[in-house]
Length: 325
Image (tube, rainbow, N blue to C red; front, side, top):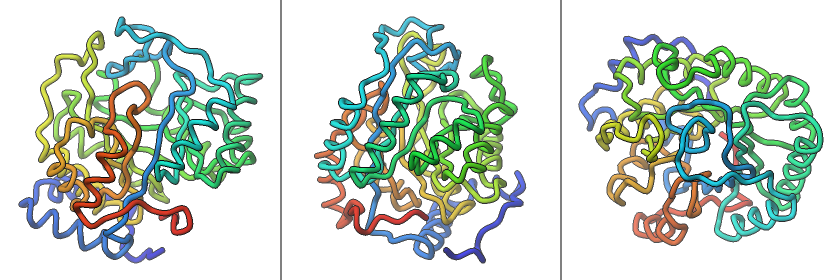
């Protein structure tokens, strides 16, 4: 990995200046760094499965899985290891090289359910896939057990800036999130952490989120950039739609601040045209989530993804060529 371009002391004023560059200049800077650290003709395919759905005690204002809101989502208990590994095999057959398992918990419960997740992780790794989990807060001991099982990455998004965070979530603090990321890092598992834009935040909040991510040393190996998916029944159901160029600017700025990281085009992708997704790739996004659902929200089908990549002369990473940035 090249380290001469990596910085961990980004200031808000610098991030603001980058984000607001004329778009051609912003894209050029992002592309230049992207080419130094990554191939530009390859996209990593990931697939995310909800292994335990609904009933979460958190009050995240964007989430249909929160028990605080009536969204019509049916609760489902933790899946069996067998069903999870069947889904993982299907994901691999579709071209995914990373399989992510998400559970609607505030924190991972010890006992039989945690033991089952451990077996899921081991099984996903035995299929030759990267294994990622997002299970809420976790202790240092739990992080070490997941690492021993072979977990490659743990997702725990910061969501937004520290200043805006309380407007979206009241049941968990920003420090709680940072502590979980620290536990993941200490266990030797790579960090997947990003945020959501389009929740009513200001530009300063976007800069603040990016700063929180970019001052971590090392940077999160994976940075998912999500666009709010408005779900009826949640407090953010009537939020104003995001301008696609704001989304592109967010991705390009993340690429410049964290050039070695995988920048993942995540939730909200179904709302993007092929042209908009292409702009995101040009801005430095080099990973997509595949499959019909992203946890519980709609996502483009794999055939659409393959057709777009074919038109662009691009391809999905193969298992043999997969490498962590």
